[in-house]
Length: 367
Image (cartoon, rainbow, N blue to C red):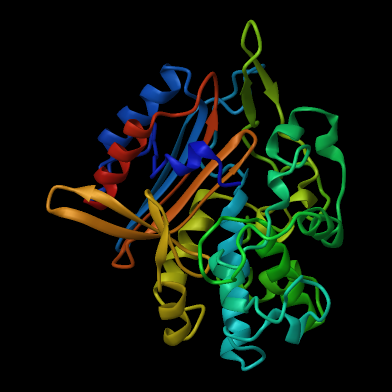
């Protein structure tokens, strides 16, 4: 989900044979992303950039190390924690419909589900200030487990919460601090299901995917395979000598509403652009989503949205969206809310992409 690499990661992209597009730094992005592939930092890199009405997408590298088949710009990938932004958007739509309020205690809607649910609010859950312990931090539940056959195990949301709540909260008073926890978005998924009477994935599809015509985005459930085409997801393992595992197939139910979705760079660009344009929620709800609090040095966090400050020559420039990571897949989807958007998927090879390379591509797009 949001591991060390993604935290040190601000953004990156890349093209190959696509024609030059005015107002998009094609040559620079192509050169920097190709350097990552040539340096064996990534096996594949997919990118989509929007600048006003102009759009451009491309791919570098290979989608399969065994065959050497080239990566495809429209390839599918696991978006990891970018799923959280979809879930948060549905919750905000429910708030717009008057089915909940952000300051409602979770206990009001999910009685008996969350310890101290009378003090944990909807806002705290979406904002990662609930204090709910992250089940992914427990041994055997981190992404490391996907390097073995256990990645095909299936889970229910209640099983994930049981793991989380076996430990006490990460801090005593909900709302007093910030701590990233996938458990929050398992609760958000259950909240959606309780209020709508339908699976959260159906609500994401009905409320977001269909209206925006995101035909290459899906909520896979227990499906372990990816739609075709896709780049295979590899992960470097610190063995002696170093080795690489193929973790493309996995049961994503371990992530559920916190990180299971699959998409393409074009679809994610469409989504984050529409969200920040105010086409998916009321203006008041979007304002709440963008109301940030300090999280970690590299970003601030709102309600299902991260805010990064891109280091431009004229000063820091804010962009909003989310990052995501599953074994073999790194994702970034961001927009400045003023016409520029960037989405990319990177597949690590022998090491993770350097922060410097990634930030330089972000500045090329947004500065």
